[in-house]
Length: 319
Image (tube, rainbow, N blue to C red; front, side, top):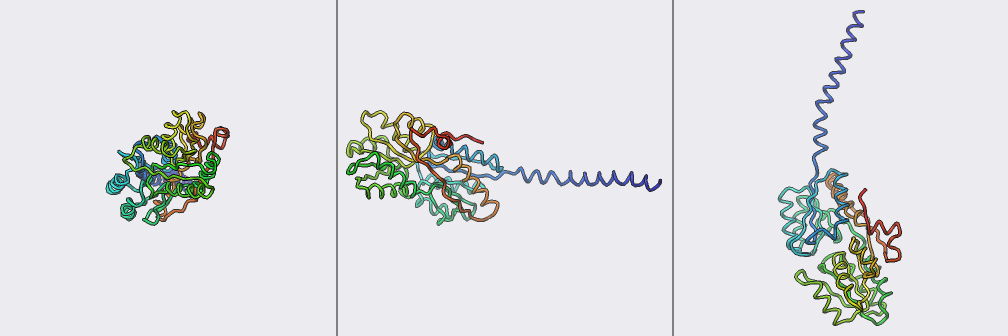
């Protein structure tokens, strides 16, 4: 009887001791799990409208992976020098990692190399792994450019002119797309004119001059912002050239439906943003570079824009 009473006292005491130990250690674990990773995202635009779907993907990844995002835009479109200043500032301010959409790899080369010595840097669109970046999220820019060249052949008879238009520096992945398209078109007997805007130039005024001088049968734009703005100019003209391009946004979907854009090569922008943040978190967790496979892309026209697989590209939604 005496032993029974002792066990009745000891067992609850042991249970209380175990419970106390759990309560004593759990807050530290919870606190560790709740400490967010701070990531700075440096866009190459003055506002994030054309990156809205990509940003949704980034924000979804941030929620899933316990990340605090700081998204930074520029005061002037595609200003690589301002990007360089922002990159240096964010590293000095204590960001755990930087996600960069480079406006010019040559201008940013040294800054990325210096930043990468302190924190991981992952880029989108333009590969800067040779400058120390830990990862790169993009489509295969050469393959996308060749695809744009192929579809533009349909709207430009042999011997006609095609205007290739980019609002981003030559030293980017966007320029790789342009070069690949140019090779396809020239090999097929089209006259190709390459126009890469400088940051201080107005797309609208430059485009008007090129249209008057060249009278192209087709125009090809190689990034979302340039495609949107080109469509806005061409839809006001009675005899506008056919417009092809790369990109995906609500505005581009509307232009496709209206016929202002003939066809686009689109990727899943939401997935691109999600994977970029995920890659940077993976670098931070494993202290090793990541190698991501190229993102897939598809040709979308007015006739197939509401097919289920293409709706996911043009009208992405969060999970």
